[in-house]
View 1 (cartoon, rainbow over the protein chains, first blue to last red):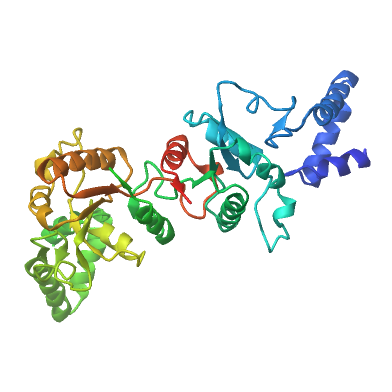
View 2 (view 1 turned 120 degrees about the vertical axis):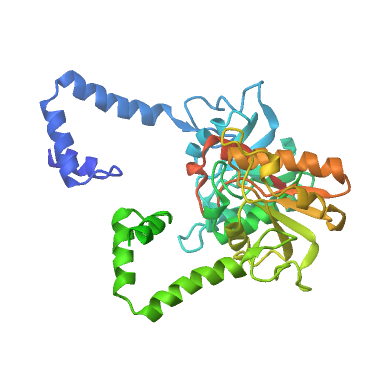
Length: 192
Length: 192
C-alpha cells in the first residue's frame, strides 16, 4: 500500500492526500478493475514511442502525419511539445507535417541544443521547402527560433525559414496589448 | 442638491449612492474648493477640442503630433479612440502621426461610415505614403479596416495600406492561443 501511494505521488498534480485516496480506491475496486488499470499503464508504455522522423508521440512508426499522402511533406512546422500539434491542428488551416523538439533552449535550465531533437531535423532538410518555426513567443521560444534559423541556413541555405506572427490576439482590443506585443504587431504589419 | 446628484449620476461608474456621497462632499467643502471644481470642469470643456487634422483630443489645434517636426508626417496610424494613441506611444517604436476615427463601423449599433471621422482622413491622403490600420482585431475593427482599405485605394491608389499583425501575444505560450489567433499567426508568418 505504501509503495503504491509513493508511486502515485510521482504523478503531476497528485499530493499525499490524493495518492492515499486513489490507493484506497484501488484497494476497494475489484481485482479485474485493478488488473485493467495496471495493464493499461503497461500497454501504454510498451506501445507508444516517438516517431523516428518527427519525434511526435505515436503507436506506429513513422507516425500518421509523416506517412499521410494528404499532407505536404515538404512543409514542416517545428513545435516545442507534442501537445502543440493539437493547437495547430485545431486551426484546420495547416496541411503540412511537424517536427517536435521536446523542449526549448534554456541556458538557465541547462538545456542546450544537444538536449533537443535538432539533429534529426537537420537530416530532414533536403526534403523540406519551408520550415515554420512555431515555438512560443517567450524568451526561450524566441532563442530557440533564432538558433534554429542559423543552423538550418548553415546546413541548407535553400530552405525557407519562417516564424509565426506575434501580435494582438484575434477578438482582443488593442487597449489590452502590452508594449512588446504592440511593438511586434506594428513591426509585423502586412500590406493589404 | 437634488440637481447636483442627478448631474453626478450621469458620470460613468457613479450610481445614486456615490453621487450622494460626492454631493455631500461638495456641500461640506469650502466655497473656494467648490468653485475650483466647477471652473475646472468649465475650462476643460472650453479648452479641449478635437485636432482638425487627426481628431485627437487636444488643447491646441493642430495637436502636438500633427505639428511635430520630429515625426514622419507621411506615416499615419489609424486608431479607433484617442486612448489608443497612448497604447501605441508606449511602444516607443512609432514615429509617425495618427488619425482617430472615434469609433468603429457597427451595422448592429447603427454606426455607418458617416458617423466616423473618415471624410477628413480621405482629404489627408495626398500627404500620406503609408497608412497603418491599427483598429482592434475584433469583428468591428476588422470590418472597419476592410472598409478603409477599399475607400483609400479608391481615392488614392498610390497610398500603401498596412494592417497590424494578429498573432500570439509576446511572452505567451502557443498552447493558450485560440484557433482564430493561431490561424492568423500561421497565415501572417514572416521569413527570417
